[in-house]
Length: 247
Image (tube, rainbow, N blue to C red; front, side):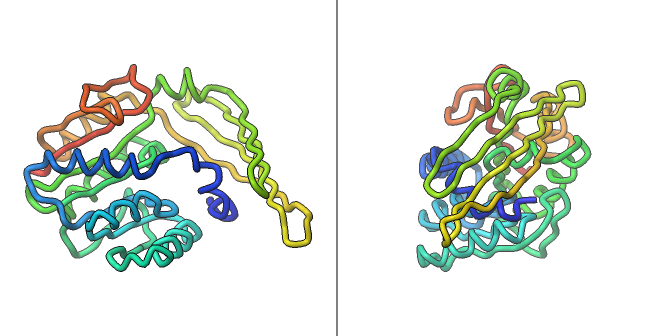
């Protein structure tokens, strides 16, 4: 997973305003009970949000399951001369580190890649374990509404600089899953195009099920916002932001 895909991920996602995303997290963290200095990020990908937060002065420990994604993230951090980021390869549903953090974040619907409520529970347990008292947990998820009404069974074609990609969505709503099949063609130095194929799956959860899991682990002051706002969110939203506190 994410082998050659890591090389073109930023091209496909270049419409995302990562600075705005980091600013939103920053504003959420200002409302926490504890001052946030050290952040653990799960599912950092190519490090776009990681770098934006590091530029705000936070100390980042960023984790991803893909070595290729981490390589890209490390290069990005080096280009920006950011010395306040550490990268680790690991599974967000089973990660241990002998340190404590003021906040744990997971962005860009990384939680939707966890294939069961048990895996989500494990992610929440891992997050709780590494947080300082009154530390914050922040993560977002795509909702059932978005999977059904926005993502659906659509096929997208991207014709980018030196990259051509066909992205096909294959919903299996009965199984609570959305499969993605990608074929992309990357221009080589000799002018020819090399083809790569990638398959991924995301899983669909009801917001109340995740909410109950967060509470069950022991988090308090659990809030669900419509992403990008401070307004209440739910299954009718396209994306929601969870914010919770370790008691």
